[in-house]
Length: 145
Image (cartoon, rainbow, N blue to C red; front, top):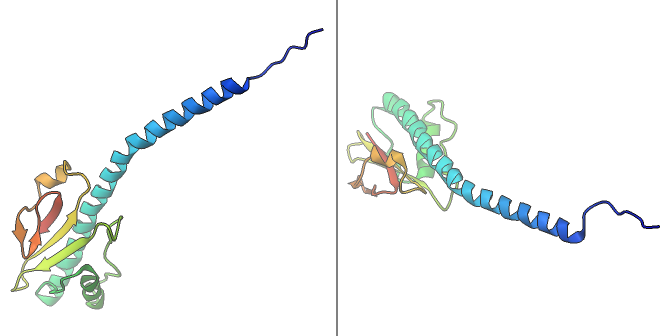
């Protein structure tokens, strides 16, 4: 009497596991660009939110803060009692950072974030060149007021 074995052989299982592993690796590699684009979108939104906080500060103080680094800017905005608890930080901080610089008369400023994608569409509408001591050349996204 012969016994009928049903099921998969070890070789068949190894082939299926290998194929699944290769497919999942290709999907993960394909998603890395989408993740970078999402972080860049967040950076642009963070600068817009900080811009809103700066406008509220200006309405109260009639000038923009003079702080040069991001932490000092946050301290200045929080201590001004304008409803700001904190300002955004870059999602990949400290590798990427946000920057702020004000004009000498404190009536203008520029906000800067370095984007991961040099082909990001937001870079078409930003400020380029050197503004108040910050280098806003692409892939840096800068907002000036």
